[in-house]
Image (cartoon, rainbow, N blue to C red; front, top):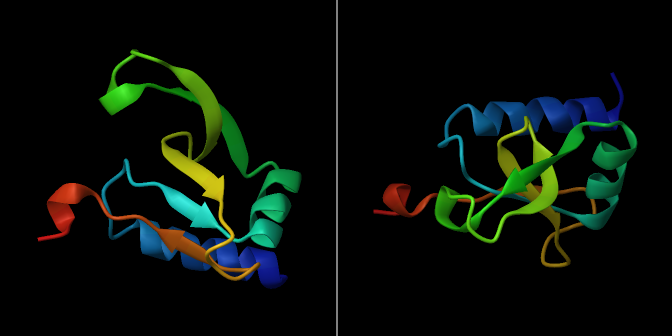
Length: 87
């Protein structure tokens, strides 16, 4: 297992404790490597879970919206919180 396999396993552990529809921010280098390894797919997401204003965006596990972020380290990820879990 290399560094990226370990980071993917860590991400999968984090995702097992949150709602299925939360997004994931990736550091630039980690995002690029997940993309290179085909761990992302392009999926269609719409406004508020509807088909309204649907666009294709990168997704992890086909259901989790992902995006690169400059706000975190190059090899880090941050799993978002759904509004209902922020109480």
